Image (cartoon, rainbow, N blue to C red; front, side, top):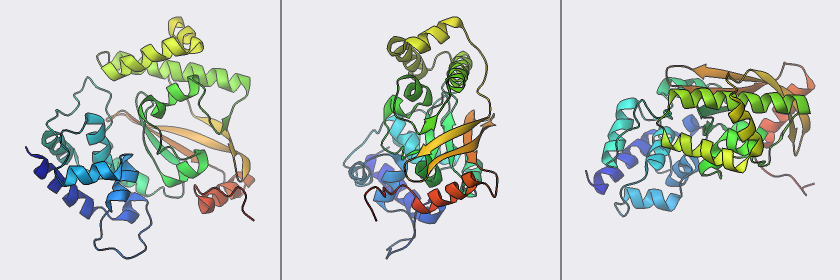
Length: 281
């Protein structure tokens, strides 16, 4: 397969995705109903210049990570995803790899939750997709790269977070994350990326190594999260972890009871979005 065929497929799939269906504004003059290159770049976490070079045949052989990100952003079906991997001269991840494919049915579910903060992660707790409301609540994750996108890596290595825990909550959360990751590692023992993640965490985090060596096993449970938002202040929300067993996906959903102060603050966050109001009058 040639890069030209890859470029044609990307342009064809980009043209059929309406921006509003991907959670993007559709205003302004458009020559086509589909996504602009810049919008696809934003959704996939890839530079617009690289997408341009792929479409024009000036770049070939994208990595598996890039192909998977493009498949998610373009909302490809399973067959289309496999075809894209073939155009990139790659083999789709097999059953021994942690799956990162968001099916069209799961994508349709997410499309109906536009007013709710939602994020989708794989079984290793690596972020695959976050809707605009999640980005507004927790901070925009689009700039995260590599292991930075993994929730276990971020939490154990002390990256900034808007979630606030009591010491008891923090301990339980850490135990839950390590337990979940151990269970995933047992299901996918030959996944090299997962093994690299665990090895790096054991070297860089004494607390992770301690819990890993203790052999904790289990699953993360639903909980309540206290979030300190830079504009609206502190709000406590229900945090439910929904599992798509067939595809081994985790859907994290934040919500507030109607009529509460937290619900009012969540509504305000939906208006603010990810804009920075600091210094504005």
